[in-house]
Image 1 (cartoon, rainbow, N blue to C red):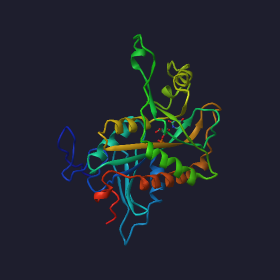
Image 2 (image 1 turned 30 degrees about the horizontal axis):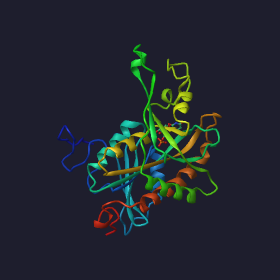
Image 3 (image 1 turned 180 degrees about the horizontal axis):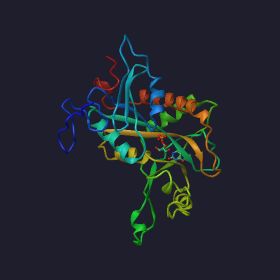
Length: 297
Ligand code: R1P
Ligand code: URA
């Protein structure tokens, strides 16, 4: 298909107002967004939305950059599910480009997967990053022989406490006996490998002491993944226009080296997804009263 022409180098839009990477425009995204990394997870969770009324379709747009946007309703409330992909730049596109085409305050929940750090949490545990998130990034200057450490660990950034509390309650109800729900501090890393302290011989990663360093600095660390920190960071600098929280399903147990059986993932994702969609339905946003995102007309 022919590519549309975009104008405005500062914030590119096509003639209909579509944003450059997500490929959606005003009216196609709501104030309540569930962001997930994986496109299969997004499609599966879109199946949990209300059935479209009277021949209407669930809105779905897939962009050539790999974002999938589904917009419908959950329990009557307009909601959007986005497959974000992986890493901080992808989360940056999702938050900034949706913010540009939605009026009023926005709530973001992330449902991710993660590595579990504390030895007591088995694979399948769902952890809410209710105590915030830090960022772990590889420092390239260390490999240019500058006198700096090879990994930098940031200060924590908090999440929205109310959104997290609703998420914990909803997750406990929906997960039931299927899995444990915990809360903790998350670390988002700029690699699945080096900055998550995975060991390998192919690269000179200098990360043998990284896990101990992380736990030494933040003993309450529960999870390692790749996007939550940036979601919280953008919410923090959004002048109050974005609130955010995040949960993740533990696929990898980093102490025991256990990895989850693939057959368990779909049900865990669906139950956690149901919980986080209900969380977004329940959360109150500033513009709800004036016909904002919960207007069901
Ligand atoms: C790595 O496997 C990916 O899984 C986690 C990490 O944050 C990273 O994006 O989350 P998602 O399953 O949501 O992608
Ligand atoms: N996603 C991550 O980023 N890390 C893990 O260990 C598992 C999922």
